[in-house]
View 1 (cartoon, rainbow, N blue to C red):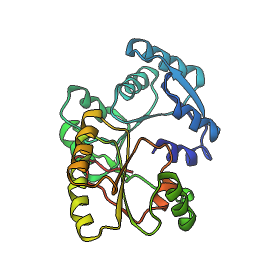
View 2 (view 1 turned 180 degrees about the vertical axis):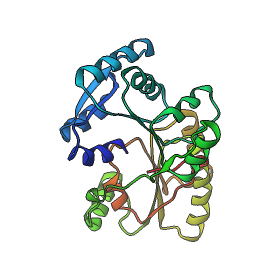
View 3 (view 1 turned 30 degrees about the vertical axis):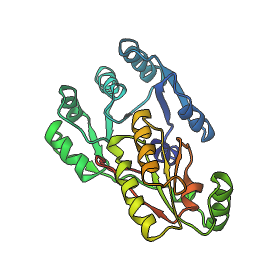
View 4 (view 1 turned 90 degrees about the horizontal axis):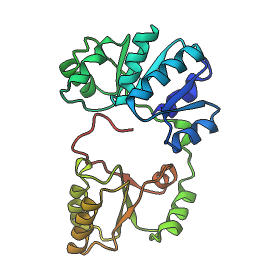
Length: 253
């Protein structure tokens, strides 16, 4: 979501991104669109002074904090010390926590859904969060469905004429893929020429449980697990239906 946003902001503003110095994918993606990345120390006691120094040295006029993590809380204190305005963008379904109270002191708080805004008002006492739903970068969407379908068949060994149902997200209890396996059993019973593609970085024990269910329901030929993919648009283009069964979701991309 940050990459989709900053790609358009850079046309009007000089933008840079500061994050964990050990992150790899984000700096690489930023370099592709000409955005400078600063890798800061992991430990909060070192991260905060480094961020303050970066803001002052770079003469940045405004700070944007992405999420409710410790780095964003560091950004809050850095802006208080450097007297810069702060935009705080929240994507998560918040719970009550003493750190959440600081969010309301940002100059602007953005929520990615009405549910997130409600939680901001309840737990962080934010009086007027602005709701801006997550966007989809339409420039990344093409009409090459036929070509993507053929490539997908070759890549994962799928039947060309089978219905393809896809699920994307971390493979974990909150994302509720177990419900998808039970759904698959019902659908395959009525429509045997159907396959399910489940994409996401897995929690090992949960994935093990899902695979046991797949074997128990004789769905090995119909359910495919794929590890994390950085770019899923071609996989989406090669499928017919997307199913989202998450239990907890403020609003996914």
